[in-house]
Length: 50
Image: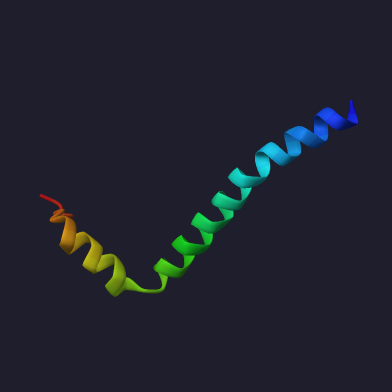
């Protein structure tokens, strides 16, 4: 049974790593408002409340 658990743990590692990477990158973006403003401007999204 321990071998099955180990296999399942290994299968979830890439997802855990990706989740951690995305969280880290989003936290960095939080402190760079110009980056977010540029992204919004480039996409043409209008975030003004009507």
